[in-house]
Image (cartoon, rainbow, N blue to C red; front, side, top):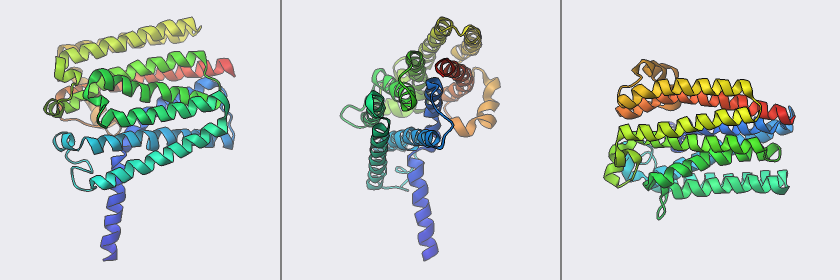
Length: 332
């Protein structure tokens, strides 16, 4: 009996962890790392490494985990169609247990962020705590009625961009220094890149969204036009990146960003022409190289998006990390 009870307990723990969706935690890490690097102020001390660990814990398992848990709770009926194996629709967790899940994570996140804000002090502390609380609030109303921002792509995409791309960069910078002017540009580019990616990520739930009355861009204008809108946003982000890098005096970086834009356009053309099987030569990167990190999909358009995401994210994040390092070196 004790062995059975122990197994059930372990299964519950696994289900609670799955509700926090660990694979999504890494989505905020590049912006956090970029914000820290661009500060140029983190020191190789135990104190600063502990601050860095707290930052990643706050925005990964706690912040992102909270939003994912809330999303699963309020999207139960949709998940019965789109993702029936998730913890709540599969019956591994009850709705009451799900409430306990995101409530406890929320309390821990607020306490930790408040402590860090007081530890930093001044305007930096206010920016840090304010950013985190904004992210938690947006993460809640994104899924919860009556606002339920995710019901309309014109609200949901900016909400994701704000939470994953903007406030993460600002918080990470504020943790170690005053907000660098260049960080505002880097954070803004991450905001719009996140908007474009979330637009395409909705391919995976088109069927459920249509049945549930969700106004995703794919439901409204179709897959081909959705790719076009997202690609225009992404290409504009790279174009602005080229201009900013040049303006900041990072001439060599601006050439690399320009080359990355050219590669991206080369990949985008076949995807726009064939939203289902475009750039199929990159499928092995999804299946073997990055499958565990970005997931798999049976929806052809979403699978095509995953193939594009591998190349786009590698190009964009590599250039972003170099830019952050150069900004940080400038202020050291």
